[in-house]
Image (cartoon, rainbow, N blue to C red; front, side, top):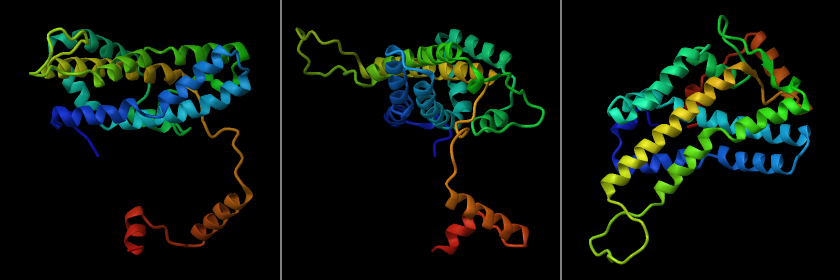
Length: 241
């Protein structure tokens, strides 16, 4: 698990970025855009939004692991001053703690943290569509396209044909451009995270739990209440060896 991206070599940084910008969120966003273009009803949009939100949570968990090191990277160059101002604006507006933001994605809240005022499922059809349009057109996705384009860019070769029309750049220049583009992508994510603080949404709401699973949960609950032992993941893994 990566905790500090500043310790990665340029090659490792590129490989890690590839994983981030190819998260399933971006496929879900494309489907959401298609539904909006087709003027789909709220039911269809809500079904896709469930996937969109769960995929967004996956991206959030991945970026949270390295958030501290990415923020430190923003401090390394004056070129990133505008991005630092945007981060400062996000931090000034944040209403929840890091643990609260993590808990919110699973439908829970931390006592004392901000409670969202807008329940997504209670929005009118027009209100819900407006929210979907806002999310689908968030700057994060434009920033992601710039990162993808740079990841596929070619670098200068010694045997390059001077007449070649294709735009190519040096490795050093490409690395710098890629770092800058990805940091903007990261800041866009922080802005999206802050925006969603005002929205109450649990992707599990409305899902039906199958009777077999519910019965199994009841049996486990009774077992624990009667004195049964609970095992940690480490203990469970060790017992299976």
